[in-house]
Length: 44
Image (cartoon, rainbow, N blue to C red):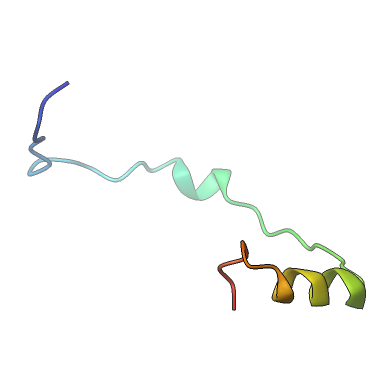
């Protein structure tokens, strides 16, 4: 592997937008409280 890469002529992946899909995760209040109190959670 190289130490540095040249992305000067790089192009965005035109198919990447098709891979992204919105999702909904339903959590109860207990799970939200535990995740907020967890020291491993970086969301707070």
